[in-house]
Structures are given as structure tokens and as C-alpha cells.
Amino acid sequence: MKYRYLVASDMDYTLFVTGQEVSEENRKAIKELREAGVAFTLATGRTSFLVSKYVRDLDIDVPCITSNGGAFYDPSSMTEILPNNMKEDTVREIFRILLDRGIDCAGYSGEGIYFAPDSKRRKFFEGYNKTVPKEEQVSFFLLDRTLLDRNTLPPFSKILVVGADEKTTRELRSRKDIESVASTGDFFDLMNIGSSKGNGLLRLADMLGIPRENTFAIGDNENDLSMLEMASHSIAMGNSRKEILDACDYITSDCKDDGFAKAVREYILPVVRRS
Image (cartoon, rainbow, N blue to C red):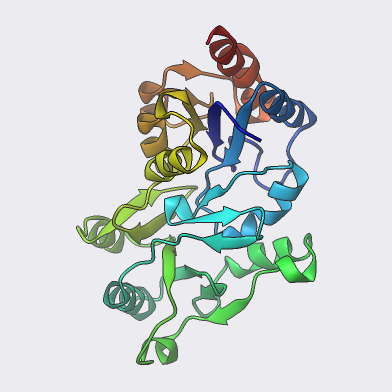
């Protein structure tokens, strides 16, 4: 289908409350977008391995932005495509810092997820695996010094850091050779230079032949800021951080109150119908 507009939505605490399903009102709103000739996609910090269920459930037919713009998930092939992988030396150095300091972390690879020993995040991925067919489940690998001693590392599009101390957080987030954004709670993400939801949004619009002035983005957290700034039309959830509220053209209601559906009906569709 040829689309005239593109809407990119964050997932957690934007389209749904983490751990819950997409509400019926938000599902209806996505259908209303498609009927109006608007492409709908997900823009998430999650790995490509954690979107197939939603792509299928919401009938998404265009690529999704994953790993905060570090890769895309292609619905037609059900695989990760166009990864912007981090430099191997950079990955090796960062993982050594995290492992030496006993900080929980995970690496997102096209092969699967690499978890630090005793990572608390593995349980979340195991829970997701129970909800999808075997062929869509995430493969798990151990992230330890044995892996780092290999001559060649797997490719990584993102490193997730969980619960780092203040010193390590400052050290990693101040590096000039990577992109860094905060996501939920005490998580922050590290990606290769050029990886952002904003760059992913513009790249996807170009891929679909949609004018950049016909792009919408909706989100709630720091890792959404780049796409909210780069989209022609930006929407903040009512539960957003202050810098997100200040950066957007329109503020909708909270995620738990179907703020996504409200934004579609009161802001996005009126703009589309005026064109």
C-alpha cells in the first residue's frame, strides 16, 4: 500500500503500559490511521527480537525502528535489517568496564541477546519467549570474559546498561564515540554514532517515499527526543518527562488513559484530513 504520512510511536508507556496489552481504543486508532492512508510503525529501544508479536497483532506492514535506531525489523521477512552496529573495539572496552564493575548489562545482536552473568533482564526476555512461536523466540548467550577474549565478537547494535553507579554512568554517557540515551527507570542505552530514533524515522520515511514534512512521532522519554525533534509533528504523552513535554507540538493524555488514541483522533487525523 502507498502511504502519504508516517506515524512512529514509542512502545512502553506510550502505546501501552509495560506488561499490559495494547488497549482496544489504541488498536482502533491504529486502524483509523491506516484507513486514512497513514503508515504506522513502532520506534523502540527494544531489540528486533521483541517486536514480532506486536507487528503481527497490530498488522504493521512497514519496517519498525528498533534498538533506538540501531536497526530495523522487517515484517515481510520477519528479520532484523540494516543494523548500524557498534565498533568492535568500542564494544569490547565497554563490556570489560561493565563486567569488571559487576554492572548488569546486555548486548543486542542480530544473533540474539547476550546477558551478563545473573542478569535480572533475562527474566523479561524469557517471559516474552513464552508468548511467541518457537521460530520467533530470542536466543540467549552468556556475556562474560570468555566472549571478550575471542578474536572476533558478534555484531552489536545496542548495549543496555542497568543500574550503573553514578561514576560509571557519567563515564559511559560522556563518551564521544557512541550515542547514549536514557530509557526506563535506571536503564540507559549505548549505540553506534548515528543511531537514534530520529535518524531511523527519517530514513524510514525516505525508504517509503513519504515526504519528511508528513512525519509524526509520539513518545514519552529521553530516547524519544530525537524523533520528536526531527518529525514535522511531535506528540508528548501526558506522562512524559518535562523535556519531552517542552519539546512537542501537542500533549495528549497519559498512556494509561489511551493517550495514543486521543492524539490520533484529536491531532494526527485532523492534520492529515486538512491536506
